[in-house]
Image (cartoon, rainbow, N blue to C red; front, top):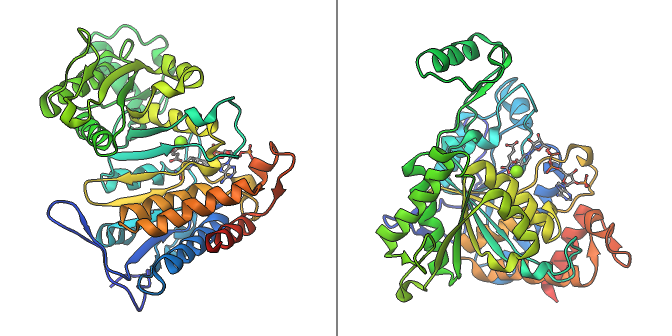
Length: 417
Ligand SMILES: NC(=O)C1=CN([C@@H]2O[C@H](COP(=O)(O)OP(=O)(O)OC[C@H]3O[C@@H](n4cnc5c(N)ncnc54)[C@H](OP(=O)(O)O)[C@@H]3O)[C@@H](O)[C@H]2O)C=CC1
Ligand SMILES: O=C(O)CCC(=O)C(=O)O
Ligand SMILES: [Mg+2]
């Protein structure tokens, strides 16, 4: 059926029900993309830790059948030069519903466009969900890292991140600039002859579906607030509209009413009394350092969400342990927040925590709570025993520095204890 994907001999597909809940067989097939750069280091470790957690939680009753699918540099080796994202990879992600991926390289300033972004766009994975929490014992640059406990809902399908742009001095850039200056009376392009142009689409539908998921998450998980983070004072019709549409949705669909005369709002008590508020992005970036306890669920646009995820991850120990998921209403692809860290590729050195915690989110998403809990328990105990990879060890003088694979083995050992 597939050209290069080998389907496992055993295992069945996860199915999506009419209400978007999942029917998960005891032996699901889970597709995975190894990833470029440090993908070769972290992905096998993640599989081993997950298999161990599942094995221990369900003693043979449940088991994952892993199925490798391809994207990025490995895809060009398997499918041929310039095939970075084969159609059958997208098809498998759709058919098997839940998958996990390592990071994929994107060249800067030219070359191919991001395959990570392409996956999100092609599969309409419009939510990038990135929880940020502190594990006791992890070294942090702030005095009270435990006060940072936020869940980022980053819009994943539009904004300047969509990659609609034209290179300076190209024919297309000239055409767009000509259109803007002649038909649209734009006078503010400072250097029209040498400007590259990027377009920032932000829609009501795109905003509403993201904010709806964030508010519902806050209600379901008893969180206290949802903050809309935007730069709406400057980009009025994109980021400002995101803020307005977010508040309007909260009022219309969730019955939010103005708090102390507004603009902040509050949901009714039967919806947890969640506060809906907003903050301008630059102020937010200083407040998360000064008063992180005031923020809980965050709903924001694509590029802000990209910056915010790495900044918040740093507060609780770095992108080496920052997990994430890309979600549509039915399909999910779990992935680390960090990239391919090319200087460490193949050295068995980096922290596999980020993709392992992404897999932990995946297990929870599948309803395999006991296995997910075991992963968390193992992570907590291993870090408390000061067994860590280089990134934490350089800030923990008494720690035992171990390799990527040895950290995975330590997690497996701590699961049993
Ligand atoms: N979703 C995805 O697939 C993503 C892909 N990318 C792509 O990755 C490539 C490299 O991007 P770059 O900007 O260097 O960002 P990276 O996230 O790859 O790495 C930046 C730095 O973060 C630290 N780091 C990253 N991962 C780990 C880890 N697992 N354990 C410990 N430390 C880690 C390292 O810090 P130190 O040097 O201090 O040790 C590393 O040098 C680019 O092509 C980019 O486009 C980027 C982000 C996401
Ligand atoms: O696609 C890329 O190369 C970078 C993506 C990224 O930084 C992210 O999704 O957080
Ligand atoms: Mg990023």
